Image 1 (cartoon, rainbow, N blue to C red):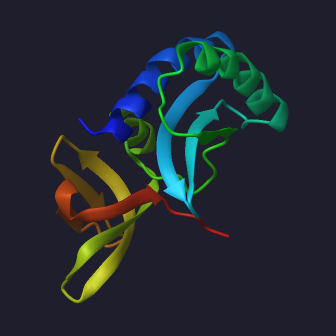
Image 2 (image 1 turned 180 degrees about the horizontal axis):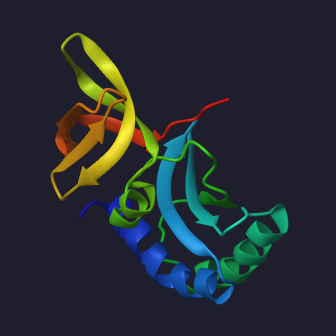
Length: 155
């Protein structure tokens, strides 16, 4: 397990009870370097959406734990945010929640000269994702082929 993955895992374990206590869902945690700075980001959600005040409550509560545990060696910026409308499906619970909804899939390599696919998420398992199209045809993708899968955004 990489250092980044260890930081994300430990953050999830410490943050989950705080988020649950507030009645929110911990959607994801990421530790990434952007423009020369490290960011530890927690994405939270709740029915009806997250507010700035919700993010602030979680941030204040968790900042004390981060200071106490001090398990991240680098200097970093901690952020709490809503996952946004176009959030990727990463965890099993994301896929479960999205069955029957329209998703957008981007693949690493072209499949029949195409890298973007939009269809209804029909089913998934540990290794594959199947979507259906308007003509009732289906297409199954290996998860290893998928660069991004998220709910399709219609405006």
